[in-house]
Image 1 (cartoon, rainbow, N blue to C red):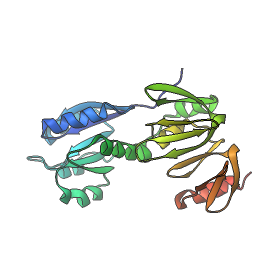
Image 2 (cartoon, rainbow, N blue to C red):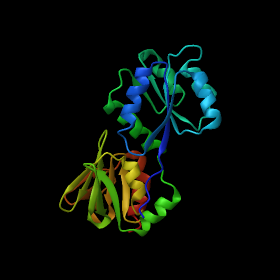
Image 3 (tube, rainbow, N blue to C red):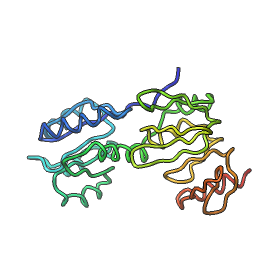
Image 4 (cartoon, rainbow, N blue to C red):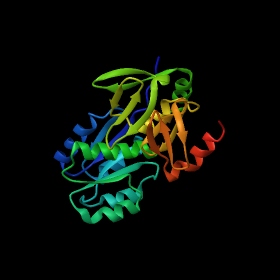
Length: 239
């Protein structure tokens, strides 16, 4: 049986019920995200966290009694935070607390999805069993147009990430999925694919040529970013 990524458990903390409902509705549309509870204030949230573990909190900053900033300083740094607020003035302080993102109300689905993708890009990992099984199989499944599509690894030319979706370029078609590029990367065999940029993963078998700055795949030139350059060139020099 094909194993899927572990669900990310989310807690919403906001003193406005309508804000809770909007965020919960948005989250319900995103795969691998599970909204486990909503709290009206920081006191309720503290009580909930005593008995439950969560991965990610959507945290309103401007709340009565205990602000979101104070709450964030008091909880474990293992719990990641996406701040939500109607006021721009808190953004700097929010990012000083190493928040994943900062959402300004009213929050659109597109903007929230981008914030969730930021979380997956930074912290999202499959467990070791998923990685091992991905390396044994010669295919993976991704969700596209409400279906799970089987993709053979050998058919992949390169993978391209956009703000809220990715394109998987195959020999004869392109598959669009809402999965993050990091989630898909975890499914790929490491000896056949290479991440060369925040937005690109390439098939090693389809490289036509490369320089220190770019790689050509089937007449398409893709940039090598500075953050990936050392690892990319080290890998390519072994061939």
